[in-house]
Image (cartoon, rainbow, N blue to C red; front, side, top):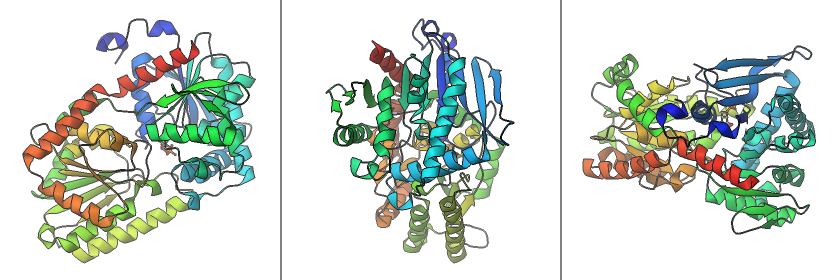
Length: 472
Ligand code: F6P
């Protein structure tokens, strides 16, 4: 939808110059790849138009690298190929075996190597070299996520003076964890080359400030302005990412009558449905969720054959050993729980390792009485927000939400639980499935009203307004 057609954009948005978004993963038109970041950015960019620069998703032999440029409506794409060595060191290695577990509070899973660290820096340099010539005067640059923390530094070295903002989609742990990373100060002090650093929650902002004060000798003003030891300054604040609430609500209302939804409904034969939708990732708390559902059936025999749990978990990062191990573990757990409780005509856990179109999922959410969003740690978790947006106002379902998802800071009318406490999770499943309609409506209405106001458009505008202000 264009700014002109939805009327929600301030006049003159386009006259401010292009929005240039950089992220590792890019959502190409009609592609349904896993990940909330790409979907959110597609929504944001389709309103402003602009350039989206990132990895093409292709791995090529050295010497055959290309920068692929294409256009879809008001979005231009510039997509860069990576070589196998770059992909291994930068994406599989430092980004997803070092930064990902560390920033998700799991230092035990960190696998650090200097070689991978160097590969990460090299790819950031490469991104900067290929992006810099595409930038125009008055462009605003918006860098996304942990893959690209040093990108502003590399762009500044090439003489780029444009406003550059950074948004971290994942959590930021306390300084005592961040400082276990070899070379942490060098990496995190590159935040000083941004004009604005955005994080998901106030907790993340506090962690950033504490770290920069304690480890980098920075000064932090009350308004979030950070002054690094060498004099560079930037602003920092929380910008909780969101969804296109009205669009998801509309999609769900129509998708609930789609053929896919009808097939799912028919297969339930009148039983209740609980749903989980997550990338297959150890941060999502899936083994504890499966364990809780198994324990629920064990301790609540009256619910056997009355409710099915559909877990959709598209695999990602399968070249990383911890992700493969998780997959094997979940297959065993689902098999064991199903073997124990299934009936000839009922399977307790429907475990599906594939991705679906966004609107199909919205339809599935609308017909689910309960959603289990129970990550051990999550920057935001947009599934929690989408589940709320997808509900039927006259008969909404119940959201069970981990305290450790950023979304819990906003969706406090959900049934908030500690995902490490299986018994608490079991009690929440029971409470959600038996919650009276007036309570369900009241809780849902509070969350839906909040999400209508705090949607993806509000998020994008808040970030870009703060970036403009940081420049002044
Ligand atoms: O939101 C966090 C994130 O890591 C994004 O940066 C990423 O695009 C998404 O999850 C999916 O992960 P991946 O791109 O590694 O499949």
